[in-house]
Every structure is written in structure tokens, then in C-alpha cells.
Length: 371
Length: 205
Image 1 (cartoon, rainbow over the protein chains, first blue to last red):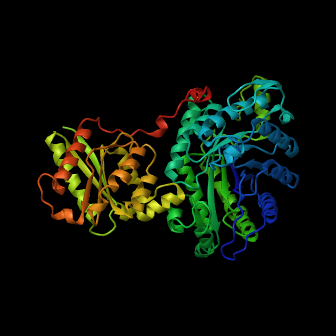
Image 2 (cartoon, one colour):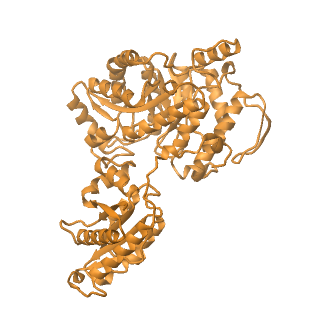
Image 3 (cartoon, rainbow over the protein chains, first blue to last red):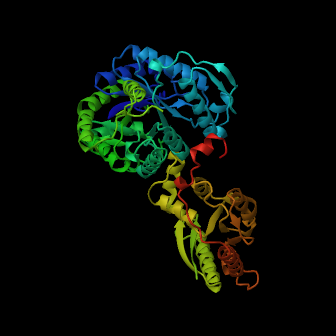
């Protein structure tokens, strides 16, 4: 099982000091956080993509390539890459380039984006969000899998004799996750292709995540990719930890109360009860996280949101130390012990290449099938 | 005999409130009219005051917590809905509007609805027609022709033809007619209605 962090990339005033980091500081802090993630033994770093203030990650592959140059084993991913407003040709090129630069240490998570004005800035319409996600991804798959593409669709200039360069590393495209908060159509899309499904998880009650993941698993099996419990599932999570749980609550409360998205709304206690947010001791985080498995089954990737709401870099790095030293080693051991036999790991570049070669040699691959 | 589910929503803020009083009278009249037509009714009454914090939280977070979740499900599953708001600043109250704002889209579509309002003076009575009814039209509810406004002075008006009781009975009868004429509401799981991917892919969705 993979453990990692995902960042929204918000520039938010620290409510305890009134200080707002500059964009430069926030971008550099993102790099420091990613490096720390590798240092403390996490597996994945994923960045969001936004094209409006107060967010900084508008060019995710630039940032991820920079991180790739400074790390050795961290998997670089996104949360999410905007499949609606980004030209699929650009996605094919950018992420294939990142594959070459990172020696295959990258995958990506596709999402639609829910900010209405962003769509027209890129010549699109949010009311076409689902059709855009479907058409653009269908094209993206062909650009990665076919050397020469003739294509015509509703949302983009036709392509005649087009070759996306560079070709994917070793001829194997990066693994794709589909992220969704609430659209069953996206779970359906992930299931249809046998891709991964990532449930945002952190902004909604567990019952909702359970429904979404259950639906994806059922449809994954329906489309012939394997049994439902072998589908590839990722979950978000959100934690803040101190040795003494009351210290964690006291320190995190002002950040929670003023946070973008849910600030000035429910209390920390209400939100902790209704969503996976866990503010407390490392042991509490371990117990809560292990509990996710009770309602989504054995899953492959757990990403935590650690660096938002104006938390200073120093605090975020401390949190990553606790996560890497005290929490994740226990989670790895416990999840592995609980895991049903036969449940696959999340595909990596190496496993996808091995599966492709095994399929070519006519034997049955042990890992996720390349489709 | 069919058992019908009625959900009564009162936006009154004081306890007790005249909006709740009107809502209860409308519910009783509807129940009686349903009985005359051979149907039973189960009535669930919701005081928005008790859910005011959860409604605000929903506006800020995008999801319903605690008991509010059950209320939203009840409205979606109701065979008929009775909505009563106090008139504030010549329109529905903010809390009443916020409640409608957090209903899942489609919750009131083609649903038989009666609307009522309360206010200090009869000069506010048309708020039902220029504010509440268009709001429900947007929600594609089927609103009965008789909307019931109760001003403070109406509570003493016993006129059998045009008094408050007569209007309540009329509205209740209209709602009962609509409810009896409709098949019982069956709530479907949105996950059972997802378009298969081949159709999404062909743009045929």
C-alpha cells in the first residue's frame, strides 16, 4: 500500500500570526514539503492544479519535474490534473515528458475542476464538464497508445496524422487515477477503463465515500477487469497530530476555524465526527485511518492533506516527521496484516512494464493488466 | 387504502410560532381530506429552527450533517410537502430560502406542494404569490392553486366562506386531490441510474 500527501497549493494567511506567505515562499515550501515526504519514507507526493488565486500550482508538471530532480524514489502525482480545461494533447506531452525525466516515477489523477469561471478562461463551459472529461480522456488514451492519431471530436480541433511526443517511457503510459467528490459518472469512467479511482473523502461523510467506492468496484468487475475487491482505490485523509491530543486540538483549531472550504462553518468536533478529519495523537490517527478499510475494503493508496489553511512550513514539516516516523510504519504493518490475499498493489511504471511484457510473452501477468 | 407520507416544514423562528400553528392546521386539513378520499397519511413535521446551524453548515461545506440529512431524505421521499414561512422583509425568510437552497436538485420536482405564510398584517399576503410560488416553480414543484396566508387578525376570523379555516380546508383538499392522483413516491438510488459508459462515450447521454 502506498502512503503519501496531496496539496491544494493554497496561499492562505496564518490566522495565528496574520502573516500571508508570498507566492514565491509557497512554491518553495511546496518543494520542501515534497522533499520531506521522501525523507520520512512516504511514497507519493501529489499536487493540485488551479488557475486562480489564492492557489499557486498552475503548472503541475513543472513543479513535479523540479521535485523529481531532487528526489530518488518518491512517486509524483497530481490531485487533480484538469482533464476538462486542459488540452489532452498538452497532458499527453507534459506527463510523458515527466515520465522520461523522473524515470517513470509519476502517475496522475484526473479531475474536472469545480470553479465555474476557469472553464471560459480556457474556452470551455462548466455545464459540459462530464462530456469534456469523457471525450478528452478518450483522446488522451489514444495519444499515449497510438503513434499516429486521426481524431475528431466535439471539443477540440481535429487531429490528422498527429504524433504526441515524446512517446511514453518504455511505451507504457503513466497510470491514471480518476478523482471525484460526488459524480458517479467519473467512477463509471474509472471502472470502464480499469483505471484507479480516488475518492476525495475529506469533505464528505464516510457513507458517501462508501457508496462511491462501492459503485466503482461493482462496475470495475462488470467491465471485466477483475473481481470488485481487486479494483484500484485511493482515499484522501486529513490529520493534525501532537503527542498529546488536546495539544493537537488547541493548536489546529484556529487553522480549522478559518480554513478555506469549511472555515466559519461546523465546529472542529462536528467536522471530525462527520468527515475523516482526525486531530489528535498519532495513535488516534492510526486507528481512524485503519477504520477507512471497514467501509471501502482493501485499498491501494492513502494520501493525507497536511499543508493547507495557512499552517506554517515549520509545522507542516513537523507533521510530516510524525506521519513518517510514528504513523505510516504502523499503518503499513497493520494494513498488510489485514489485507485479503490476491489484492493487487497500486500499479507503478515497473509493474506496468512487467505486465505488458508478460502479456506479450503470452503468460498471465500477476499485476494490473495494461489496457 | 394507500398510506401517504406528508412532510410539513415550518420556517417559524419563535416557539411556539404562528407559522407552526398554520402548518399544523394545514397538515390536519390535508390528512382529513386524504381520509375522505380513502388514504392514510403519516405526517413528519420539521421545524427549520432546529436545523438552522446544520443548514448554514451545509451552505458552507456542501453536505448535510446529523438530523438534517434525514430531513432532506424525507422531503425527497414525501408524497406531499407543506411549506410555511414567516414573511420577513416582504418575502420568505432567509432560513426558509436557505433550506430550499440545500435541498438536492430535483427533490421537489413534480411533487404536490401547498404553500403558506404568516405575517403581522394582511398587506403581506401576496408574498406567497410573488415570492414563494415562483421559487417553487423554479423547483418544478406542483403547487396547489390555493396558498394560505395567515395574518395576526386572521386567527379570529371565523367566516365559513372566506375565513382562515375555510382557506386551510380548501388548500388541504387541493393537496389531497393531487396526492391521491399520484403514484406513491419511490426514492431511487442515484447510483442505480448512472448512464453506462458506452453511452457516455458516444455522447448519447
